[in-house]
Image 1 (cartoon, rainbow, N blue to C red):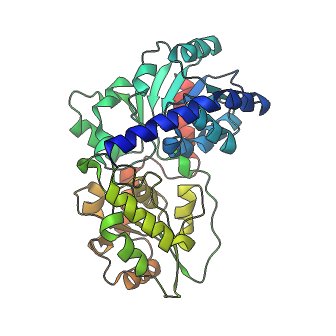
Image 2 (tube, one colour):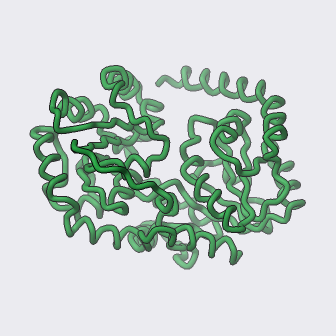
Length: 372
């Protein structure tokens, strides 16, 4: 994507957001979702293209609210607020003004503000004294972004487990690991078991290309078409294709390729909103280095990992579960589905996650929020 195209899209997005503000405020009031009590806040400054980062935490905070925690969401984009109202009953406050947000949260006695990404706009909110600032992120992985020096800005950083503590401690100079809190993956606590199927269910869930070469873990251009075509006409399999929602945002080549794949394999596009539920559906998952791969480990879904970049996950998975090419993939998938989760992959669940027991991760997060 060219710089000019990107700038034009940003301007157009801002204009749409400004135009929608009055209607969105009315929607919040009519839905009776005005924020009038807010000890614990999810803060999100981004537009709707990044909504998935917020979306993966909404159900967790809804469960916490049902358990008696005071929870709400603060957003700074009206179109994000509109998306939020479609999928959640949590109280909402929308404003483009940090000053207005600070006054509102002071008035409501907010105790914690939680952040789901490393957005630069988080750092304006971080000036607000009083509440604890808690980094959640939107998944566990070994991407370069997971060891950002920005973590120093937060009072606490929630991480999935001991692997993240070791990674951050080794990679971020002068970081105080006492600020890390291991909670597992609360998003996986309320997933619904799937009924058995006569077919082998395969989920191909590649990540996006990132905003730099160092962040490009995507298999879409390199392997996407060849992975999906391996299963064409083979009645043993049911395949779902779940590309990352930001795929093609940064690379023109990736944008062209994902458009082709979405058209050619339209009937296989994953219809499920919750990425964790998509993994529960699968008998075998094919993932890049991304939160999806690590969630597959947590959920004991047999995993094929693409890519050649070094990582603890790649180093510790059995060699036969590493995918450098799609040659013979259908048969390899069939064999892995029959064999089930390898012992080494099961051990990785303990390495990457503080807990995988249903409900325990949400409990750990609730305990942190209750203690601040």
